[in-house]
Length: 597
Ligand SMILES: Cc1cc2nc3c(=O)[nH]c(=O)nc-3n(C[C@H](O)[C@H](O)[C@H](O)COP(=O)(O)OP(=O)(O)OC[C@H]3O[C@@H](n4cnc5c(N)ncnc54)[C@H](O)[C@@H]3O)c2cc1C
Image: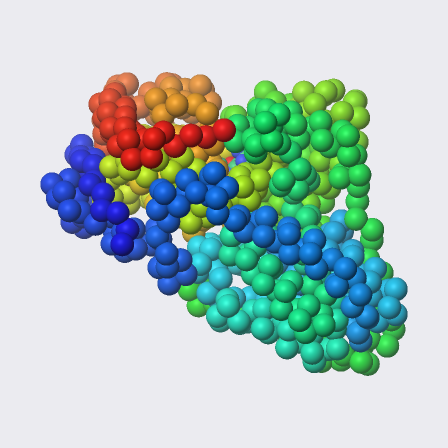
């Protein structure tokens, strides 16, 4: 049975104009000591019981933390080592398979390159595979914009592969657990004895690849999963005491040093070769297959699809062009401007990294080559700063591999699960809708709803606001982001939310609480980001735009229907400090401290 936890006082919204009051759903947990969190976690979809049955206890997290439980990443590494000889001995069949997942590109793709090499050596065709699983989308909370982006990318991929005589087999398999079996069936049908793919670092995926490595070999098939999504594989970096780094700065220094010592990590994977000309005769039914249809619950409206297609053209050629444009025009000023949401100064490449239309390795190599220094941490400050941001991606994937319980709805600092979060759905809805009365928060949430994207600084601001000011369970925000972002990436999103809620790897203590008004003044000094996304405030002059009701523009804001602030920040800050302190006290009392490296 999951532990019963008491819950916090719900946030009490201050009045706002009537039309912004969402329908209140009674979920008041404040006066009920026996309030059952697990039921509410399920009801709100924070934990999807259909996919993740066992409750992760703090005790179990601690055992993972102390390495008393085998980590899925280590298990995959060890099965890969143990089966290396057996897999090497597998003779070539009649074809070789590459399984595309979150690596939807031809250029600089490690597993695809290995598969192509194997096919060429054996004189057999390469067949590529992509499986759509609506259940997988559900389990991963994949947003409709992201599904649309992936399906649009498949068109590009199919065309590019087709020009080399390489078929892209695509199928929809409802049940995610049936994907491996389907791939094995296809291997039988196509006489394939070698399957390649790139590793994903989430727990389910690591376990699936471990199982596939074993079962394939039992059937005489070599299944090889390789590192590609990260520049430095997890496990390659350790502290002096041999532990994993859980703090970014020393990890980053070790990451840079490791790449300087192993420069091949940035090398381009060998280009793939065209298939034998007979492939179209041997496998005619695999060419020009229709792109899988969008699952009904992931359909966009026509207007949304049109807008998002224009904003986020799909495919690796677009990714390469965007990268080149960014390097040529923006990267030099990146360090000074990257925190200003109105400046449009970042690369907007995250959707390409997270769907794999661009490898982080490719981007870092290009940035390094554009630098005045061959080193990753010296030369042009814009370039070094961008590389260090990209490194966060690797960092968070290392975190998934080393602390797998973060994939199981637990915070990295698991002792923080005893905080009495609020589950006030009306307050949460106001946050989702950009109706909090805090202009910078509302602008950011509306950017997300419109673009399926939000600027990094704003992600931090709205994250802190939800977890600290509203004291709402940060996992509700994490889920909402995944369901709306086009660049949703479990590791970066989970890491970002851990940072914002102070429950993650960030060493800063919980009492760092963003003041949304000060953040707004500092990072949107002209208020242009706010005016762009909150039209109710477009005519508000000067600094009043950051906080119209306290700065003399209340009448104008009210006239245009902009809500009053739903809470007083100073009060909310005080309450957050108390609730965090209390929750942490209870958590550490249970476990003797929740020690982290
Ligand atoms: C609460 C929260 C949730 C987030 N969720 C996601 C997510 O689901 N997917 C995602 O890709 N990023 C996420 N981020 C990180 C970051 O906000 C985005 O990567 C960035 O805004 C993307 O814009 P860009 O491509 O213009 O970035 P740039 O500034 O151009 O940076 C280049 C690349 O570096 C990586 N990067 C930059 N900052 C970070 C970071 N803080 N953490 C991890 N990687 C980073 C991204 O791949 C990005 O595309 C989140 C951050 C927070 C605080």
